[in-house]
Image 1 (cartoon, rainbow, N blue to C red):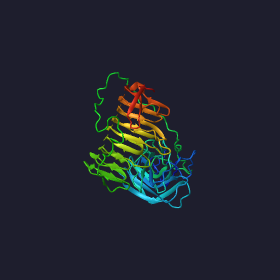
Image 2 (tube, rainbow, N blue to C red; image 1 turned 90 degrees about the vertical axis):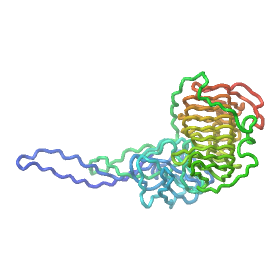
Image 3 (tube, one colour; image 1 turned 180 degrees about the vertical axis):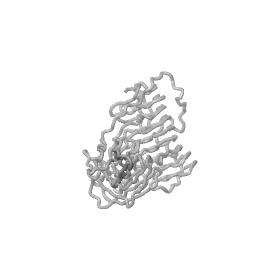
Image 4 (tube, rainbow, N blue to C red; image 1 turned 120 degrees about the vertical axis):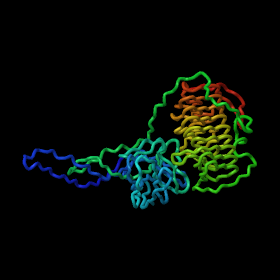
Length: 502
């Protein structure tokens, strides 16, 4: 990573000190010069920064807004935006600066673009930003071809740094606030050009000051964090384990026939009111028997969704805030095609008898108090995806995944039907699920507190590498089995026990 520097200095004036007229003038050390403020400018990269290897190229074929979340250690200004243009990308581009609430602070059209590589546009007037607050710089692509690399490492240059957690963000459709993120933490190579007054004391000199060495361009290789210390295994049944009886019309494990919108339900189509989404802004809203031909964006608490069909994603995150909701007897995802984004997320929600289809990821758990029961997930994937049935990312306390069916056998770019690996996950219950597919089908690692994996059924030999990858010493593991099933997800035989393997 290379920072570019701009320095503007005033000439300091130093007054001479005179001694008393009736005694000799004593030697007096010259005063320490006053600090000379300098306007400096940094960014995460420069227009000449080259990448080896080049960032991976993605061709989604759909309009998309791509951005970088960042913060500055002190007040300053954003002067402009850069982005790295992927080969084959076409059309005009517009850059934007957003605050954490999704308010667009400025925008600029990119002109005189090259075929690929770094593109730069400067605002007509610098935009002031507050130190310590999170902002987003982004650009919009109508063509949908862009550069993106997973496992983004922290970016830092002077007072400028990438925001913790979600470095890269995106939003499909027309240009709007990009608040969605891939759990693999992508870097989309969008760069803020930041300026600030540096008033650190410096001695005037006839030579040009040498800028401090910038941090190197971040490596594409992700750093492995050591897992959180694991508690000693407990042999007793945890007192916090949920008691539950399956509900609904499913005779066994959930299937497409007993989840989703009930047959015969008349649906009223809602007109999209926020780009490609229908946004709920009123607390306590009930959506019953509706069809949303796009995403459902929930930005109010205590929202209920039932007997409905959502063709895109259900998400309750806006900026850095999550809003509570319940969803039941509803279908999420397109009837054809495949969306990379998770079907339902992020935090403080309950999902019951939900059918998720046409998504690379079924459910995302990114906070506290998440309960998913009696639901069916049929996964797909697009090239470069890492499909998961349930996926944890910056997870919190109280995750229950119980009596669900996750079928990953038709997806090619995969990780696991159950992928619970976030070190922030505390008190996790994975109980009585039917799962199939994946590299390692059942992955439960790094969680702490009471972790229960009990009574799950894994379709025998449906995995690529192995059935289990887990922190066995810290899990209350019991009653898990290998089974065979028929085409209707009915268990036809028990092959044997499913032991825990680290």
